[in-house]
Image 1 (cartoon, rainbow, N blue to C red):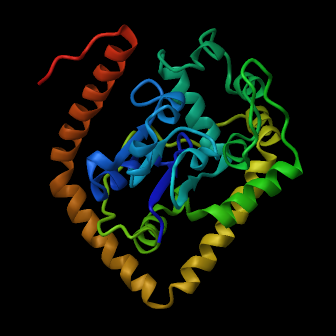
Image 2: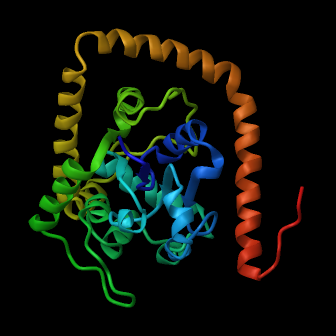
Length: 286
């Protein structure tokens, strides 16, 4: 059994929803949120006392594969992959709408999605998982087949869960089994209008596909792995899945409004603490 679960949250893959599930299943004092701007930065996390890092049950956030080297004890990863075209479109729209986002400068001049994907590093999901290290100030290398192979190897050897955004219910139910999570009910978080191929021009679609060839191969492979996990779970899995969907619909209907209120308050509190750290002040206690 693992001592620490590391959730590698690739942006725009339903990771905010899964992070909320994890937040309910682990004691708050034993969770570290590594989200630059609203939580710990990666350097801040690595600088935490070893005893603090050793006592964590869950680490979640936006970081690339490799953070386990700074987590004492036995750790395993979990992540979600999304259809690369839909992920790219959703990420572009999110960055365009978020003036605070560190990559907003790339599209604040009204750059199209074709311009954005050509400027941004290619194969975003593979890049997060392959373990390639980038020195500060150095350009991102173009990825190749060896990076795809490294990403697959990391997923096979270090990840207890590789979920699929488009198959979220199956994925979280397996997460409950494989990660020992007693409650995986959820409400969707941080969701914008549906993203994806429909509505894209042929030129935009080709531009995205040209920059996500490895991601598309990795996504197809992960789909096959999820199929295998579901098959291994046996015939009873489909009945359990239907029961879970019914229970989750009740949960979202009755608990949803309260959780949205609490989540908004918690987000604002984390943002205030982050800003206070940057300004060198202590946040007001409430």
